Image 1: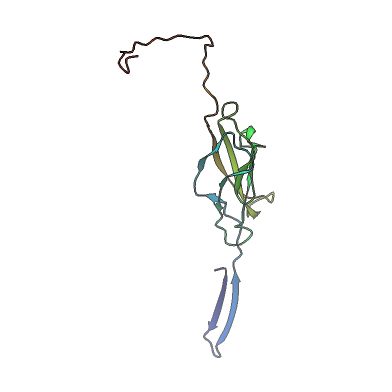
Image 2 (image 1 turned 30 degrees about the horizontal axis):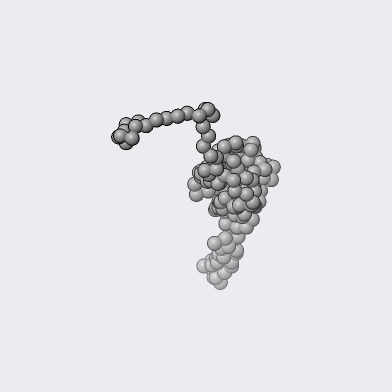
Length: 170
């Protein structure tokens, strides 16, 4: 409750009655918080096209809008350099990619940080910046069996095995 109505009665002769309203104004003093500190997600190699990887959500305990309105952005300063251009974050918290990953020739793990920020300057901000909180994601590239086996020695080798050899004796 942010509005309070107070009635005052003074017991004198004649009695005096008055009222006043007190309105509490929400200060933007709460930072967006995530339920967990970090998360590991995955993408499958050789997939192409726009794909949603995850939907994240942070909560801001301020009472009023815009102080409790949370949006999201990729923090390029903290994330791996290869993240930019491969992963994207919508303001609603959707993490997506349109890149095609090859586990054999590229990285197998990408670390990205997403910043959640609220909708108004922080109550103690000297530069009109909102409250922020970073969230770490590790995105693993899942291997697909797409590379056939190759013999290291290309010359032909003949191996003979006696037909009476017991299994497992090599």
